[in-house]
Image: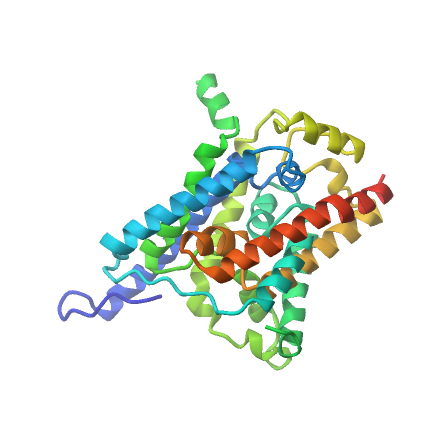
Amino acid sequence: MTRAPHIPGVHTESASVPRTNTGLLAYLLAGLFFGVVLVKSEAASWYRIQEMFRFQSFHMYGLIGSAVLTGLVTTALLRRFGHTRGGERICVTPKEPGWRRYVLGGLIFGLGWGLAGVCPGPVFVLLGAGIWPMLVVLAFALLGTYLYGVLREKLPH
Amino acid sequence: MTELLDLLRSPWPWYVGGPLIGLMVPLLLWLGNRSFGISSNLRHVCAILLPERARPGFFRHDWRAERWNLMFAAGLVLGGLVAGVWLADPQPAHLSPAALRSLHSLGVSVQPGLVPAKMTDLTQPGVWALLALSGLLVGFGTRYGGGCTSGHAITGLSTLQKPSLIATVAFFAGGILSANLLLPLFLAVIR
């Protein structure tokens, strides 16, 4: 957690602990909100993902397109006029340059996405919805992550 | 009251859901300069689970500094419970006629819920193979490619990052290949 700047007499060390906790709670609530959105917008639906990859409906394209457009405009406005809730400057971490890892890693991820129809967010959402077989997907996703960690030095990036 | 419940249970159109998904990017930046993305959680969980000695260098990162991401994932589980169980849509997804025909020819029946019964029937060895392979590719691919749908397609594209455009095009290509070629092979084996 990034701490707020220390102002003598205003923020004490003991006061910073509950602040960290409320900080984490905010992310739990943000996740809850996003989980509801993923279900209600049907982005976590296997059926809709299959429909998208077969170009049979506009739904998912509209969903992703309007999400990117909204993100683009609101993030630009926040960077221009806003700051974080702690009063810091907004900084967006740039992705590492290159193309090999993005082409190869992206392709591999896509192959998995099209099969069970779940990307990482919906795995958690579907578990919450009581679809326990997703534990198999999660366990093997962890194994895949571990394999990447082991093989990383040998892969082109 | 029942009308309100019906409204809460019905799915949202894309023009409602899409903007709400897009708002996650500025929301997490405002909460603490966090870059919206979910798949890095898998790396943190690996770091937590692996014993110190068996941990490759990739997992010797400061996951405690990224606890927000684990909290976010916990929130996703709660969100799935709220919307997928308590406010579950009693109707099957309103798919296009073309999608209904395709799924029918694959032997998948469209029922209420988010995932068809055929895809989650663990008495079928083919289902285990499908779920395991899917998870393996998602875990490996997202770390190799440095992100998933939220990290690249939503966050990366809305902050105009070229690597994210490359990754998004690549994972769509992978998804199209897999949904049209690989999945039918699996479904032919699964009864």
